[in-house]
Image (cartoon, rainbow, N blue to C red; front, side, top):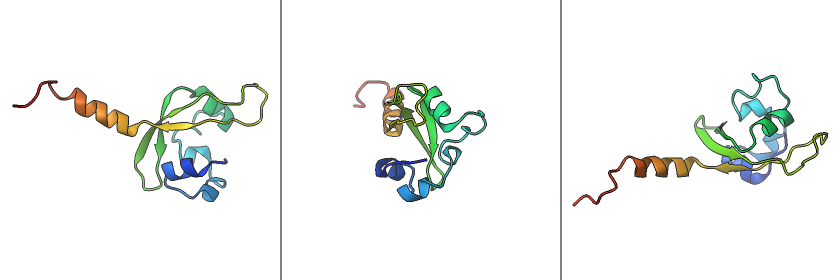
Length: 102
């Protein structure tokens, strides 16, 4: 698995350490599906997933569609968009009455 520095920081790891890891180390449940990394990422494109940070907490992220479109490409190039803060913000605003507290 190759990851850029941005993804490495997202999951709290060193980019070079990610090359020796499996996808299931950062995307729990991906190994249980019995799919390859490429198949797993493509199957989850556009979906929200739970990534495992090195410190043990969960990051909710959305996986993009692969930038490599041919089905026979041996690689998959995706982006992960951290939506954790958006979820917390929506929960915070969704739990209020929508009226000012005067």
